[in-house]
Every structure is written in structure tokens, then in C-alpha cells.
Length: 332
Image (cartoon, rainbow, N blue to C red; front, side):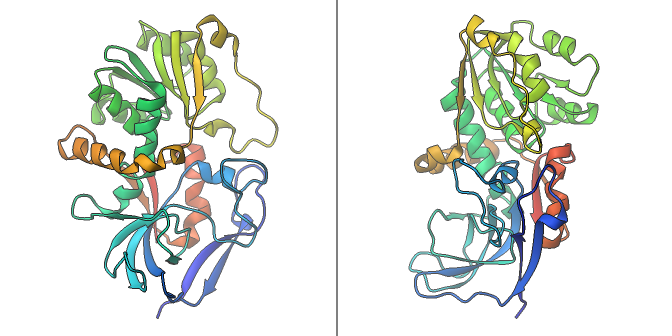
């Protein structure tokens, strides 16, 4: 039987992660004990939040401990089971980590249907990124038909879904992305009304032109200079669901603050959220997203990279350099 190959956190990264921050471990394939099952991991989800999980300090989840398998959502097939609910052959998704094989007791594991969508989509648009977009926009952002919704990282896993859900709910959807090619994809393939290139020298003017009636909901994935450009364009009583601040994740010094005076002037509501806050309603999101997807209203795209677990450090950094389009996934 093939050995289990895994990525373990060797040290706390400073700035951009490097291969030296991890070790590649080889160990026997784990065997299920009563009440557990073994998953052959097929695809690992690469998410911006991973960078924060490596840091010490207070957060919404404990940091990954040094020497532990790197935390990651993944999808795979149950290979062997001594569990009363999960059987051999089941396709499942959960926090299985960056490794070939994982043991699970079934807690927070969901069974998925590969006949309805490929496996990798269940950690993309139909998985945590999709749930994040669904609850973050609809529950936190509360868009109304006719309003303008702007989303940063619009070509990414979460942002691409946010804009499409906004369109489904009768809103004007404007994306912010890096580069002309990504902006073209956001408009032509995903159906956004407009997309603005934050790398352009005319970004500020372009954003103003794209939102002639201002911004009612800004779905924040980036922070930094992009947030600075958006805030003055916010309408009164606008809403800002804060999903991520990827521009600051690899910072080695405390980032400067945005121009928060706009919050007072426009009486904005800014609310951070974590998708786990809505865990009891995940089936609702799966049903809605799946229905929109089946009806052709919601397009999903995965950027699948090969190389197995050994490629994890290099592929992860694509998230922070803008090197991916769609949901970044590592095939293991």
C-alpha cells in the first residue's frame, strides 16, 4: 500500500511562505478504528485564510501547531470505514489537511454527490467558498434589487460567486480584479456588469465611472489601497461584509489603516464574518447554489494545479500574487 505523504508546519512564516516553513512527511497509511473512516484525499482547497492559520495569536480558530499536518479543506473518497454513517465509496468533504490519506470520526464532514458536479467543485463554488459568498452577501450585505454591489478579488473563488449571486438578486455587479485578462473573464464569462483593474494607473477614475450611482454593498476580500479607493464611493447606509484582507496577509509590519472617516460620513455598516458562523445552514447554501448552478445561473471555475502535496508551498503563494483564476485547488 502507498505510504501517506503529508505537509507539516515546521515554523511560523514571516512574510511570504517558503518551502522551509514546511516539512514533507512520509508515514504508514492510517487504519480506521471503531467509529472512524479513512479518506483518500483527491483535491485540497487552497484558501487565503491558510496564511493566518500559520500565525500564533488570537483568531477564530487555533493556529496550526508546529509539527502538525497543515490544516486544509479537502475532498476525497472513503476507502475504508468502521463508521456507522460513512461507507466505503462515499465522496466526502471536510478538514482533512494537506495529505494523501486522512482519518476522520465524521465530525463536520459532508457527503457530496460527484454525479452532480466534479469532486473539485465541492471545495469550490459548491463548497466553503460558495457558502462564504452566499451567507456573506445575502445575510451580511443584505443587497436589494437595483442596488450596486462591488466585490474585490472578483476573479477568485469567493468573489466570482458573490457577483453572480448579486446578479441573480437583481443588483448591478461590479468586480475589482488584477489585470485586463481577469477583468475580461469577470465580465464576459461570469456576467458582471463591469470590472475594474486595480493595477491600472487610472484605477480610481475607472472605479468612479463604473459606479455612477455609488456603491451600496462592498464585499471586501482585499483591503489596502483597494479599500481606500472604495470607501469614498460608498452610499449612505451602505454595507461592507468583510470576508478577507488578503493584501495584508504577508505583511511583516502592521498595515496602515484605511480612511475610516467615510464610515461616519456615510453611516456605513462594516461587519466581519466567518463562514463557520452559519454552519447549521450549510445545507441551505448547498441546495441554493446547486440549483442556480444546475439552471445555468451560476458559473463556477476551478484552477486545478498538479504536483501532489510536495507542490503545496509554491501553489499556495499563487493566491497572494494573483496567479490564479477561479478556485485554486491542488490535486494530490
